[in-house]
Length: 200
Image (cartoon, rainbow, N blue to C red; front, side, top):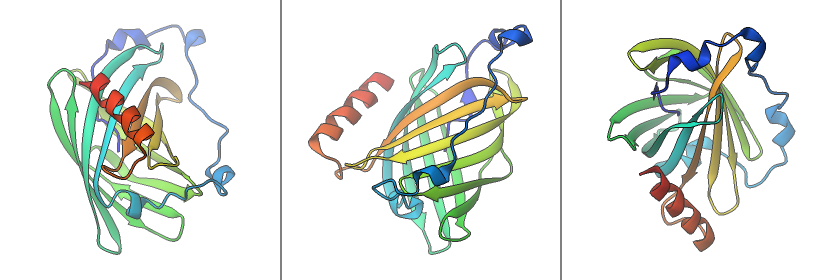
């Protein structure tokens, strides 16, 4: 559910090991089991969803800005999400995710570029999605790990933050804000509109 092409200078990451940031978190999705509103992926992503996001390198520098329109379909077993990305530099791309619900809380999914299957768990208003991805970086491809977190907020905004790491070392972060058209409070609508304008 995250962009699959980055444009930044690979040499920025070729630094002495003492300066590298290790990508890890002590969060557990069960910590958010009482969070509200409850996030049910197949309900939230059914139909149209819109998001705006940024990619920041390990120094916090914004390297890419983008918007994404998602068309989701739930057939009772599989959630299919067609994601159409538009980047601020004019590039576009499409990715299709297929998520299968294993039980009340657990999911697995596939998409082009994902190595094997992604695995995720939803509790309360949170969802944690873990996967390995063949990420395009300029003219190269890096095999990286995504630790992807989503948090549903009152008013319908879904905050998504993913840490991208290689060999356990953080190389960047992706941040997005999703919303359902026409299903937000006026305050949240203004926030989303500002985010979309900033990403253009």
